[in-house]
Structure formats: C-alpha cells, structure tokens
Length: 227
Image (cartoon, rainbow, N blue to C red; front, side):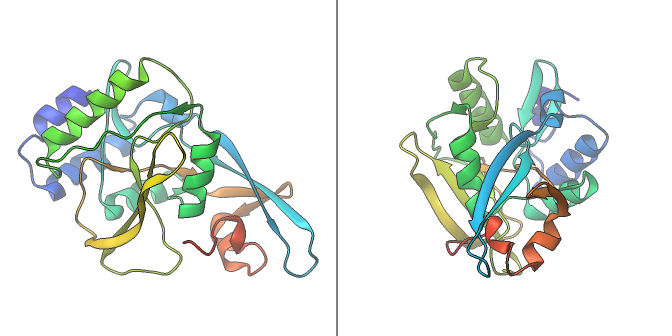
C-alpha cells in the first residue's frame, strides 16, 4: 500500500484502527527502503568515577516512520503504544530528549517547522503536513530533522501519557519543550516516530541500550538533566 492509498483508506478512521493498519503494514515490510539505512550519531559523557571521557555511537533512521515505497510513501504519526510495538519488533527503541538534540545537530537536511491549526489529529491533516514537508525538502536526501515533534522516552516513567519534544527551528531552538500533558492515545500531525537501533557502541564495545541506561556511569550518554 502506498502512502497516498494509506491516507485515502484511513481518512475517516478512528486513531486505534489507523494505528493498527500502520503497524501491520510496516511490520510486513511496507516502508521506504531509505528507512532501513541508519545513520551514525556520536555522543560522549564524563565518567563520574575516573573523570575520563566516554565516547559512544548509536544509529538512527534517516526519517520518521512511514508507509509505502518508491515515490509513493508518507510519514505516519503513531501513538507511543504502536511505536513501541514496531520498535521492539525491529530491534530498535525511541530516542530521548538528549538524543533528539544530537540528531538535529547531526542532520544534513534541516527544515523550518510548519505548524497547522485545524483538525490537528485528523488523518487528512497528517497527509497534508507530509506533502508540505516534501515541498520543503525538494528531493534533498540524508538525515532529516526539524519537521516533527519526536515521541521520546522520558527520564522518569509517565504511565498513561505520551511525551513529546523537539520540532527545532533553524536557529536550533525547539518549539516543543518536553511535554507529557497528553494521554497516550493522543496523536496529531506534528508527532513523529524516529527509530534508534538498540545496540549502542560504547568505547567500541557493543551494548544493548537497556544496559547503558541501567549503568550509573553510562546513563548520561543517552539522558541528561533535561530529560
């Protein structure tokens, strides 16, 4: 199913039904090939015990989760429940606030955010926003940022809520500070799902991201005090 057909199909659907179709299509491989080629992002922190610098590298999808292939594809905002199911199935996780900032700094294609104000949670607005972004992008390729608010994993669990952050302007300042005020089933045109490969290379050693987060010495590679 191409992106245009997806949005024609879900135009009047409830969010839960739209989520379900998107998950089924993406896990069946119905997604653009460029989303399968991840980009490295470097980060570092200071070891609290030794004072030495710890370097790390993680890999991120070039764009936000989308349905379709070839020339007919479209970005699809999802609830955190659907996003987590896809991430778990594909060996990935969702970024933190710190990582969103690092991804923006690393991005080759940075676009000015385009807010929309009517029917924000409708499928029609989601499709229109995708088309607007493509008009801005003008075929440029590479890691893209500044086009969506990221659904992120917060520093502390917030049951029943979705946490969003980002949508950086061209001056590097995000429109959206960390915000967990929406219920977890709320999703609108501005939300984006960025996949991060779950293996993190810490000083050249492969580690699962959960082990990095569980380590008092390494957690700050992925989180900082703003998360």
